[in-house]
Every structure is written in C-alpha cells, then in structure tokens.
Image (cartoon, rainbow, N blue to C red; front, side):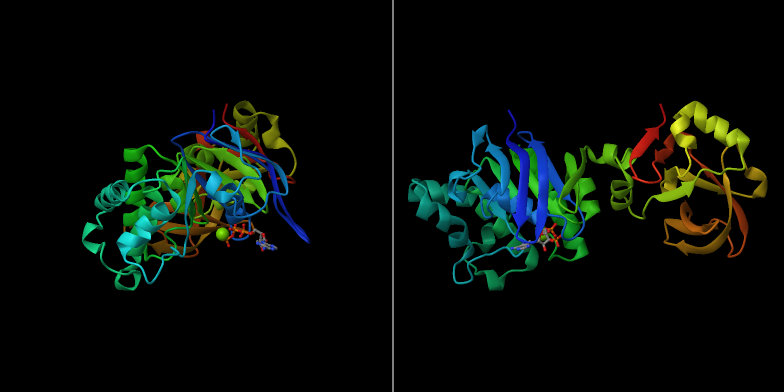
Length: 356
Ligand SMILES: Nc1ncnc2c1ncn2[C@@H]1O[C@H](COP(=O)(O)OP(=O)(O)OP(=O)(O)O)[C@@H](O)[C@H]1O
Ligand SMILES: [Mg+2]
C-alpha cells in the first residue's frame, strides 16, 4: 500500500487548470521531490495533499484511506512552508509545543519529551527559550521542521523550505534533511523548482510542466533517460544539447541505425547529449559520428571548463578540462559518447530511443 496515492488529481480554477489529472504513488519511507518551473502546479499539488486546497477532480488516499474531502487535521500530515510561518510572540519551545498541547491528547510531560527529543536531533536545544526574531534563517528553518517532527505524522510535506537560505546554508540543510530522512525513515513529499535539490534529495523525482506530470523516476534514471525534451532540458545544469543527425555522414547514419533503430534516422529527429557526453578534438579526430564546429568562447571555472561551440546555427556546450588548449574561432570536432545518445522526436519531443 502506498503512503500517498494521487489518482487523477485535478485542480481547476475558473479560467485555467493548474493541475491536470495527476497520477502519483508515494511509497512509505520515500523522499519524493516534485520539481518543475515556476507556475507548473507544485504548490497546488502539495496543498491539495495537505487539504489546504479543494480537489476539483480525482481521489487522494493517505495510508490507504480516502481523504479526498477530509479536513487537514484528519490527514495525519505535517507541512513545512517556505516562509516557516512561526509564531513571532512565542518561544522556540512553545512554537514546537503549541500545536500538540492544543490539539492532541498528549500530557504536558509527553509533549515536553517530544520537543526535547526533536530539539536535540535538530541541535536547537540551546535556542528553546528564544523567540523567532532572535534566530538566523537556518535556525528558524530548523524550528519549523521541529514543529512538524513533534507531531510524528504519517507524511511530511515541504514547500521550498530552503529557498530563503543562502547557498552555503542551503547545502548544509540539504545534508540535514537527508540525515533526518535516513534516521527516521519518514515519508516526505518535497517541492522545489531547483533541480539540484531534486537530484540530490529525492529517492524519486516527479517532474511537472504546466500542470502535467512529465516523468517520475530515480534521479539518475531521469537524468540519463528523460522521457521528453522538456525533462531533458529542465533536469541537469548546464542544459542538455540538442543536435541534428548529421545528414552527410553515411557511416554515422548506418551506425545510428544499428544501435538506436531507424527512429534515429526519421526526418527532424534530434539527438540529445549532455555537456559531459561530448569530447573535443582537432579536425583529424572525426569518427563514425561527429560534428564540426567553431569555438565561440571558453568559460574556465577552476576545476573544469565549458566550451561553447557553434555547430551550424546552434550553440553546443561541452565540458572539458580546466586548462584545455582552446581558442576562440578555432575549428574543432565534437564526438559523442556513443552509448549515451538519446533520440528525440522532432515534433513532439518524446524520447524515441536510447541505446538498446
Ligand atoms: N488561488 C488561485 N487562483 C487562480 N489561479 C491560481 C491560484 N493559485 C495558484 N494559481 C495558478 O495555478 C498555477 C500553479 O500555481 P502553483 O502555485 O501551484 O505553482 P508552483 O509550481 O508552486 O510555482 P512556484 O515555483 O512559482 O512556487 C499557476 O498558474 C498559478 O498562477
Ligand atoms: Mg510554489
């Protein structure tokens, strides 16, 4: 039985559909990340799971129970918001204890025990007497998480919980969230528009686009085998390159046909290759399948460099060594890692083939 089951979940506003017939099962103990660009319907989906937003159509099960129309407090979930939503006039301790004291049947001692335990786990025991305005952003975030933890819910929902933190703290908190998930074995649905967060945190990620679910899978599976060009472009930074099948190369076309089937040779077909899946060589380096281009610019980042290469009328980004000898205007050959090609339909953008 899934911890959460979304079955044809739809959210319709008077003038548009924000979430369109979404099907998604989240397993117990899973860290499911909903990711996608701004406005694609992530928060709306999360809010429907939480019961903060009516479901226009479809069915929602939590722990096997139909909660499509249940009140938020009947759903056994806890939500952590981007804004933290802490009570400013209460101490950290009371921020964490208040909900339990008010709504649960737990005794004061039991509540105290839970607050102390969560505070210890989140390393905020020393802060329990302070008020939110006496805390750093990262500390406030921990309090918000602590408030969810003490309730021991079936499911934790997070809506962009790290987006107000600076880059360093975000990396640190990512580690903390991972640790919490591993130690407590909790079920998490986590919303972010940041594909790095999605890749690093998710046991699986669900990629959304304009109210539709485009793909669900383990991060590396989505990275390696994106279901379509939208997912291919959205996941991975810098973005995947899209190149036409070189039509002059008979040997290349034969090779493609052998390894990827004849889909690869349909008119308009596009090949997807990530920057790390292309190598650069001098003009003598051309092989069965390669493109020639001209170096436009080289961005040296210290540990690595990215070369922007003009191929026909497209710009292609190639990752290379930091001190690669490359100069602007230099003619160059791009060769793909042949096992990594992805073939996309020129019209629909759907993935047609990866190597068999
Ligand atoms: N109360 C509302 N009334 C009408 N439209 C709404 C309402 N709330 C959200 N929307 C619309 O629904 C769509 C999805 O919004 P949602 O907040 O779920 O996006 P999101 O994926 O969380 O984006 P972001 O990354 O910017 O937070 C958007 O087009 C948004 O404008
Ligand atoms: Mg949102």
